[in-house]
Length: 193
Image 1 (cartoon, rainbow, N blue to C red):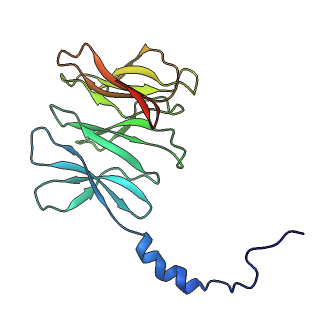
Image 2 (image 1 turned 180 degrees about the horizontal axis):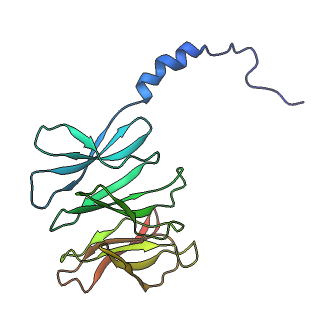
């Protein structure tokens, strides 16, 4: 005989859930990127159900949402020298198959830089600002391989190293932009630089 643990418990009124909802819905602001030439920044702010990129044009200024997507944006970063565009990552439907996009500040045009199918990691700008390094599952939809791309020319995208596993992360470039600093997190207790 199966015994229910919910016997003799009255139903929870909908009014309790409605009152509790005000404590579960909140807005936050995350600082994502300073403009390299002006006193402006990009922040991530949640309106409704998802984080989106917002531009703040001056200290104490109002935020203005730039791209509008039904899915959350997870990060944004200005080109480190010109600020004429920024890159951001987002997924579709919460599947965490993140793609990297370029947003042109002057035109408001958004360009998909990755393949639209693989999972792509956070990116790191080169010191010169002419490339980003990131990881992607593009080769086999499992292992995170290293890629480098000039975001102004998505055809420049190329794999530079194959990896095994999914705990890899690009952290930074060397000062001469010839070497990457990366980490490999095997578990919560084991990681390597």
